[in-house]
Amino acid sequence: MSLIIIIFLGIIMIAAAVLALYLKNLVAAIISAGVISLLASVLYLFLAAPDVAMTEAAIGSGLTTIVFLLAFNKIRSDRED
Amino acid sequence: MAKRFITLLLIALLAYMFLPFIVEVDETSQLNRVAEKYVTAGPLELGAANLVTAVIVTYRGLDTLGEIVVLFIAAVGIGFLLRKPSKKKIAAPKRSSSEILRTGSDFLIPLLILFGVYIFTHGHLTPGGGFQGGVVLTSAALLFMLSNTEARFNKQLTEVIESVSGIFYLIIGILGLILAGGFLDSRFLQLGEMGRLFSAGAIPIIYSIIGIKVGMELIGILEKLRKEEI
Image 1 (cartoon, rainbow over the protein chains, first blue to last red):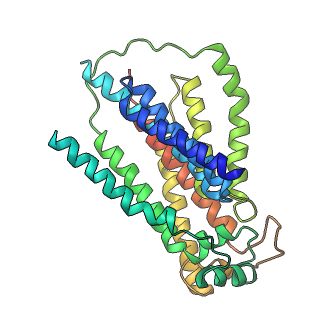
Image 2: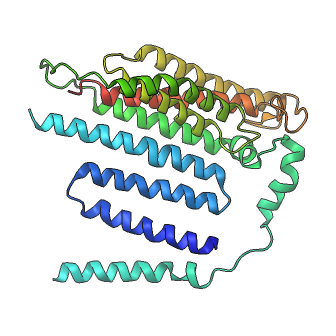
Image 3: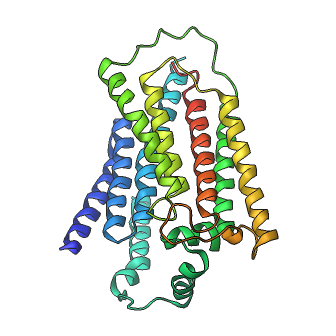
Protein backbone atom coordinates (compact mmCIF):
# COMPACT_ATOMS: atom_id res chain seq x y z
CA MET A 1 0.00 0.00 0.00
CA SER A 2 2.70 2.47 0.97
CA LEU A 3 4.65 1.50 -2.15
CA ILE A 4 1.69 2.54 -4.31
CA ILE A 5 1.50 5.90 -2.51
CA ILE A 6 5.24 6.43 -2.93
CA ILE A 7 5.08 5.69 -6.67
CA PHE A 8 2.02 7.95 -7.01
CA LEU A 9 3.82 10.80 -5.21
CA GLY A 10 6.86 10.29 -7.41
CA ILE A 11 4.78 10.55 -10.57
CA ILE A 12 3.14 13.77 -9.36
CA MET A 13 6.57 15.16 -8.46
CA ILE A 14 7.88 14.46 -11.97
CA ALA A 15 4.76 16.06 -13.44
CA ALA A 16 5.22 19.15 -11.25
CA ALA A 17 8.89 19.37 -12.25
CA VAL A 18 7.99 19.24 -15.95
CA LEU A 19 5.26 21.84 -15.36
CA ALA A 20 7.75 24.13 -13.61
CA LEU A 21 9.90 24.03 -16.74
CA TYR A 22 7.17 24.54 -19.32
CA LEU A 23 4.71 26.91 -17.65
CA LYS A 24 4.76 30.35 -19.25
CA ASN A 25 3.44 32.08 -16.12
CA LEU A 26 6.50 32.38 -13.88
CA VAL A 27 4.55 32.66 -10.62
CA ALA A 28 2.78 29.41 -11.44
CA ALA A 29 6.15 27.83 -12.24
CA ILE A 30 7.53 28.90 -8.84
CA ILE A 31 4.49 27.47 -7.06
CA SER A 32 4.90 24.27 -9.03
CA ALA A 33 8.52 24.02 -7.92
CA GLY A 34 7.30 24.45 -4.34
CA VAL A 35 4.83 21.60 -4.80
CA ILE A 36 7.76 19.28 -5.58
CA SER A 37 9.29 20.01 -2.18
CA LEU A 38 5.97 19.62 -0.40
CA LEU A 39 5.43 16.18 -1.94
CA ALA A 40 9.05 15.26 -1.21
CA SER A 41 8.44 16.04 2.45
CA VAL A 42 5.40 13.72 2.46
CA LEU A 43 7.61 11.10 0.84
CA TYR A 44 10.24 11.49 3.57
CA LEU A 45 7.52 11.04 6.16
CA PHE A 46 6.53 7.75 4.52
CA LEU A 47 10.18 6.68 4.58
CA ALA A 48 10.25 7.28 8.37
CA ALA A 49 12.44 10.39 8.33
CA PRO A 50 10.38 13.03 10.16
CA ASP A 51 13.34 15.33 10.78
CA VAL A 52 14.20 15.56 7.11
CA ALA A 53 10.50 15.89 6.26
CA MET A 54 10.17 18.91 8.55
CA THR A 55 13.21 20.56 7.03
CA GLU A 56 12.00 19.94 3.53
CA ALA A 57 8.49 21.23 4.25
CA ALA A 58 9.68 24.36 6.06
CA ILE A 59 12.67 25.33 3.95
CA GLY A 60 12.07 23.65 0.60
CA SER A 61 8.42 24.36 0.08
CA GLY A 62 7.91 27.35 2.36
CA LEU A 63 10.93 29.61 2.50
CA THR A 64 12.41 28.86 -0.93
CA THR A 65 9.12 29.60 -2.65
CA ILE A 66 8.79 32.89 -0.80
CA VAL A 67 12.37 33.91 -1.59
CA PHE A 68 11.82 33.06 -5.26
CA LEU A 69 8.60 35.09 -5.33
CA LEU A 70 10.26 38.09 -3.66
CA ALA A 71 13.21 37.91 -6.05
CA PHE A 72 10.85 37.63 -9.01
CA ASN A 73 8.94 40.65 -7.75
CA LYS A 74 12.20 42.58 -7.44
CA ILE A 75 13.33 41.67 -10.96
CA ARG A 76 9.97 42.67 -12.39
CA SER A 77 9.89 46.04 -10.62
CA ASP A 78 13.49 46.76 -11.72
CA ARG A 79 12.66 45.93 -15.31
CA GLU A 80 9.73 48.31 -15.39
CA ASP A 81 12.00 51.31 -14.81
CA MET B 1 18.28 18.36 -34.33
CA ALA B 2 21.78 17.44 -33.14
CA LYS B 3 21.16 19.42 -29.99
CA ARG B 4 18.01 17.50 -29.20
CA PHE B 5 19.80 14.22 -29.93
CA ILE B 6 22.58 15.11 -27.49
CA THR B 7 20.00 16.03 -24.85
CA LEU B 8 18.23 12.70 -25.25
CA LEU B 9 21.56 10.88 -25.12
CA LEU B 10 22.46 12.64 -21.89
CA ILE B 11 19.09 11.77 -20.35
CA ALA B 12 19.55 8.14 -21.36
CA LEU B 13 23.03 8.10 -19.85
CA LEU B 14 21.68 9.60 -16.64
CA ALA B 15 18.94 6.97 -16.51
CA TYR B 16 21.55 4.24 -17.06
CA MET B 17 23.62 5.72 -14.23
CA PHE B 18 20.70 5.58 -11.83
CA LEU B 19 19.52 2.12 -12.95
CA PRO B 20 21.49 0.24 -10.23
CA PHE B 21 19.58 2.17 -7.59
CA ILE B 22 16.36 0.58 -8.83
CA VAL B 23 17.56 -2.85 -9.90
CA GLU B 24 20.23 -3.78 -7.40
CA VAL B 25 18.73 -2.26 -4.29
CA ASP B 26 18.01 -4.68 -1.49
CA GLU B 27 16.60 -3.76 1.84
CA THR B 28 19.25 -3.81 4.50
CA SER B 29 18.14 -5.66 7.58
CA GLN B 30 20.96 -4.52 9.81
CA LEU B 31 22.70 -1.24 10.47
CA ASN B 32 26.14 -0.56 9.17
CA ARG B 33 28.98 -0.16 11.64
CA VAL B 34 28.86 3.60 12.11
CA ALA B 35 25.08 3.63 12.52
CA GLU B 36 25.27 0.76 14.99
CA LYS B 37 27.82 2.67 17.03
CA TYR B 38 25.54 5.68 17.12
CA VAL B 39 22.45 3.67 18.04
CA THR B 40 24.09 1.74 20.85
CA ALA B 41 26.37 4.42 22.27
CA GLY B 42 24.29 7.52 21.52
CA PRO B 43 21.58 7.22 24.18
CA LEU B 44 24.11 6.20 26.83
CA GLU B 45 26.65 8.88 26.03
CA LEU B 46 24.40 11.83 25.25
CA GLY B 47 21.00 10.97 26.70
CA ALA B 48 19.03 12.43 23.81
CA ALA B 49 15.73 10.74 23.04
CA ASN B 50 15.91 11.87 19.41
CA LEU B 51 19.03 10.21 18.08
CA VAL B 52 19.06 12.34 14.92
CA THR B 53 19.58 15.43 17.06
CA ALA B 54 22.39 13.76 18.98
CA VAL B 55 24.15 13.01 15.69
CA ILE B 56 23.56 16.46 14.22
CA VAL B 57 24.47 18.52 17.28
CA THR B 58 27.23 16.50 18.89
CA TYR B 59 28.69 13.70 16.79
CA ARG B 60 28.56 15.78 13.61
CA GLY B 61 28.61 19.14 15.37
CA LEU B 62 31.35 20.51 13.15
CA ASP B 63 29.18 19.86 10.06
CA THR B 64 26.36 21.80 11.70
CA LEU B 65 28.74 24.66 12.35
CA GLY B 66 29.63 24.50 8.67
CA GLU B 67 25.95 24.68 7.70
CA ILE B 68 25.50 27.72 9.92
CA VAL B 69 28.48 29.35 8.24
CA VAL B 70 27.05 28.55 4.79
CA LEU B 71 23.76 30.16 5.74
CA PHE B 72 25.59 33.19 7.10
CA ILE B 73 27.59 33.55 3.88
CA ALA B 74 24.36 33.30 1.88
CA ALA B 75 22.81 36.09 3.96
CA VAL B 76 25.93 38.22 3.57
CA GLY B 77 25.91 37.58 -0.19
CA ILE B 78 22.28 38.68 -0.51
CA GLY B 79 23.06 41.80 1.50
CA PHE B 80 26.03 42.50 -0.77
CA LEU B 81 24.05 42.03 -3.98
CA LEU B 82 21.16 44.18 -2.82
CA ARG B 83 23.26 46.89 -1.22
CA LYS B 84 22.58 49.37 -3.99
CA PRO B 85 19.21 50.94 -3.36
CA SER B 86 17.06 50.94 -6.44
CA LYS B 87 16.35 54.27 -8.01
CA LYS B 88 14.76 56.76 -5.70
CA LYS B 89 11.31 57.05 -6.97
CA ILE B 90 8.25 57.73 -5.02
CA ALA B 91 6.67 54.37 -4.51
CA ALA B 92 3.00 54.16 -5.19
CA PRO B 93 1.06 54.13 -1.92
CA LYS B 94 0.97 50.54 -0.83
CA ARG B 95 -2.30 48.77 -0.78
CA SER B 96 -2.90 47.81 2.82
CA SER B 97 -3.62 44.16 3.40
CA SER B 98 -7.14 42.89 3.66
CA GLU B 99 -9.14 42.59 6.84
CA ILE B 100 -9.18 38.79 6.57
CA LEU B 101 -5.40 38.55 6.31
CA ARG B 102 -4.86 40.95 9.20
CA THR B 103 -7.27 39.20 11.55
CA GLY B 104 -6.04 35.76 10.54
CA SER B 105 -2.40 36.64 11.02
CA ASP B 106 -3.10 38.29 14.39
CA PHE B 107 -4.46 34.93 15.43
CA LEU B 108 -1.75 32.80 13.80
CA ILE B 109 1.46 34.73 14.57
CA PRO B 110 1.57 33.95 18.34
CA LEU B 111 0.81 30.30 17.66
CA LEU B 112 3.55 30.12 15.02
CA ILE B 113 6.11 31.74 17.33
CA LEU B 114 5.14 29.33 20.09
CA PHE B 115 5.40 26.37 17.72
CA GLY B 116 8.81 27.49 16.44
CA VAL B 117 10.16 27.86 19.95
CA TYR B 118 8.68 24.48 20.86
CA ILE B 119 10.39 22.84 17.88
CA PHE B 120 13.85 24.08 18.73
CA THR B 121 13.67 23.69 22.50
CA HIS B 122 12.36 20.13 22.15
CA GLY B 123 14.82 19.19 19.42
CA HIS B 124 16.39 16.50 21.58
CA LEU B 125 13.00 14.89 22.34
CA THR B 126 10.88 15.17 19.20
CA PRO B 127 11.65 15.47 15.49
CA GLY B 128 12.90 18.85 14.40
CA GLY B 129 15.43 21.23 15.77
CA GLY B 130 17.16 24.52 15.32
CA PHE B 131 16.86 24.90 11.58
CA GLN B 132 13.21 23.88 11.38
CA GLY B 133 12.23 25.98 14.41
CA GLY B 134 14.09 28.96 13.00
CA VAL B 135 12.25 28.69 9.71
CA VAL B 136 8.89 28.47 11.52
CA LEU B 137 9.81 31.67 13.39
CA THR B 138 10.63 33.22 10.03
CA SER B 139 7.24 32.22 8.67
CA ALA B 140 5.60 34.04 11.59
CA ALA B 141 7.67 37.11 10.70
CA LEU B 142 6.68 36.73 7.06
CA LEU B 143 3.01 36.66 7.97
CA PHE B 144 3.59 39.83 9.97
CA MET B 145 5.29 41.44 6.95
CA LEU B 146 2.37 40.48 4.70
CA SER B 147 -0.29 41.78 7.07
CA ASN B 148 1.52 45.03 8.04
CA THR B 149 2.97 46.30 4.79
CA GLU B 150 4.33 49.49 6.36
CA ALA B 151 6.04 47.95 9.38
CA ARG B 152 9.76 47.24 9.23
CA PHE B 153 11.95 44.95 11.27
CA ASN B 154 14.81 46.69 13.01
CA LYS B 155 17.82 45.57 10.99
CA GLN B 156 20.35 46.36 13.69
CA LEU B 157 18.44 44.37 16.28
CA THR B 158 18.16 41.21 14.15
CA GLU B 159 21.83 41.45 13.23
CA VAL B 160 22.94 41.92 16.82
CA ILE B 161 20.82 39.00 18.08
CA GLU B 162 22.15 36.83 15.26
CA SER B 163 25.79 37.73 15.92
CA VAL B 164 25.47 37.27 19.68
CA SER B 165 23.90 33.81 19.27
CA GLY B 166 26.63 32.88 16.80
CA ILE B 167 29.27 33.90 19.33
CA PHE B 168 27.50 31.93 22.06
CA TYR B 169 27.43 28.87 19.81
CA LEU B 170 31.19 29.04 19.43
CA ILE B 171 31.69 29.70 23.16
CA ILE B 172 29.67 26.58 23.98
CA GLY B 173 31.75 24.65 21.46
CA ILE B 174 34.95 25.79 23.16
CA LEU B 175 33.47 25.02 26.60
CA GLY B 176 32.95 21.47 25.33
CA LEU B 177 36.60 21.41 24.28
CA ILE B 178 37.75 22.50 27.74
CA LEU B 179 35.29 20.70 30.02
CA ALA B 180 34.38 17.59 28.01
CA GLY B 181 35.65 15.41 25.21
CA GLY B 182 36.07 17.83 22.34
CA PHE B 183 34.85 20.77 20.32
CA LEU B 184 31.03 21.05 20.54
CA ASP B 185 30.83 18.14 22.96
CA SER B 186 27.55 18.65 24.81
CA ARG B 187 28.42 16.57 27.86
CA PHE B 188 29.83 19.35 30.02
CA LEU B 189 26.35 19.71 31.53
CA GLN B 190 24.52 16.99 33.40
CA LEU B 191 22.84 14.43 31.13
CA GLY B 192 19.83 14.24 33.40
CA GLU B 193 16.96 11.85 32.94
CA MET B 194 16.29 10.85 29.35
CA GLY B 195 13.08 12.29 27.96
CA ARG B 196 12.91 15.34 30.18
CA LEU B 197 13.13 18.86 28.79
CA PHE B 198 16.28 19.65 30.76
CA SER B 199 18.32 16.67 29.74
CA ALA B 200 20.91 15.59 27.20
CA GLY B 201 23.56 18.01 28.37
CA ALA B 202 23.94 21.16 26.32
CA ILE B 203 21.98 19.93 23.29
CA PRO B 204 18.81 21.98 24.02
CA ILE B 205 20.90 25.11 24.58
CA ILE B 206 22.89 24.63 21.39
CA TYR B 207 19.75 23.95 19.36
CA SER B 208 17.95 26.98 20.83
CA ILE B 209 20.89 29.17 19.88
CA ILE B 210 20.92 27.71 16.38
CA GLY B 211 17.16 28.28 16.10
CA ILE B 212 17.41 31.95 17.12
CA LYS B 213 20.37 32.50 14.82
CA VAL B 214 18.73 30.86 11.80
CA GLY B 215 15.45 32.69 12.42
CA MET B 216 17.08 36.12 12.69
CA GLU B 217 19.25 35.46 9.65
CA LEU B 218 16.30 34.48 7.49
CA ILE B 219 14.23 37.42 8.74
CA GLY B 220 17.14 39.63 7.70
CA ILE B 221 17.19 38.04 4.23
CA LEU B 222 13.43 38.51 3.78
CA GLU B 223 13.64 42.11 5.00
CA LYS B 224 16.46 42.86 2.56
CA LEU B 225 14.53 41.31 -0.32
CA ARG B 226 11.36 43.14 0.65
CA LYS B 227 12.97 46.53 1.06
CA GLU B 228 12.44 49.06 -1.69
CA GLU B 229 9.94 46.85 -3.37
CA ILE B 230 7.18 48.75 -4.99
